Image (cartoon, rainbow, N blue to C red; front, side, top):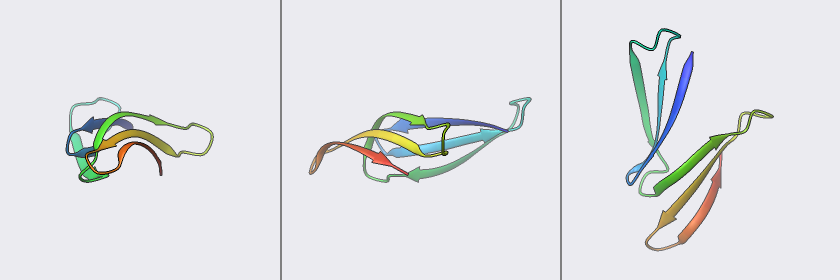
Length: 64
């Protein structure tokens, strides 16, 4: 299985597919209402870190 983390102005989306990458499934938005600029999975424990911004709270780093 392949996973792609996609940050947008509307939140974080996770796209998953099989190894052939022909069919994709979209889940999300996670972090709804946050602008997500960068995400990275931590291979040590599977956590996901996301660099975000909010009009109210400013720049923030989220950890799953």
